Length: 291
Ligand code: FE
Image (tube, rainbow, N blue to C red; front, top):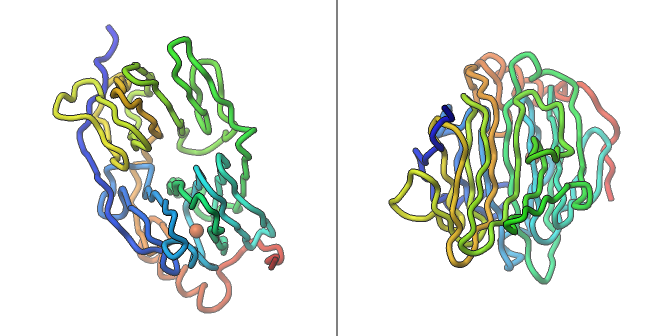
């Protein structure tokens, strides 16, 4: 017998939040939701056509113990880090960054006529890899495969796989799936999930009704978490439905969280803060490239 489809067990409308040096964004979930989204820690959606909402950006700041995933939908974001990486993340590009033991970077949205929009997702690292060597993956839009189904669904595969198509981000400890799905008006979409994995969806545009949930369709900007079960199944509204579909294997480890640093114990947080003060935070460094 196949398992019944997963149904929504939590809904998050997103909370207006000021982050970085003064960027207005909507926070879907964060430290108040631990461990509901394990192995995911945070989801922010940024988007505005008013430069005052995003120009201040996210100047130099540290990370330790996590992976940060930036997906730009519109506009572009300049970045630089202590590994020596620098460049521009453009529309449709993904930056999947493993902070490991420590990285200091900046993420600065550029003013563009159409404004900017996109997501940042934080993916937790298992205890054994939190002090690992930092790694950087920059993927351009053309490197991210898009599958078009007979029914007219379009699925961009960043991580994990859809059918026989595998995303370019591989070898991540929590075995994530990260899809950007577009279902045409009135269409249906189904995706099989791993038993025991955490699964959530964020509606980008339009609306969709997920299986087992008759209360109301999801709306743009809303994040929903699914309970246990088999596939995720959704029917798009008459406006169609574009959404992120994300899943991963839970870590079931203690979470100690201080701003951009997420470890397992308060003692590990204390030593991180101490190392930031004494200049010993960065274990692997190449020169910061100023543009
Ligand atoms: Fe950051």
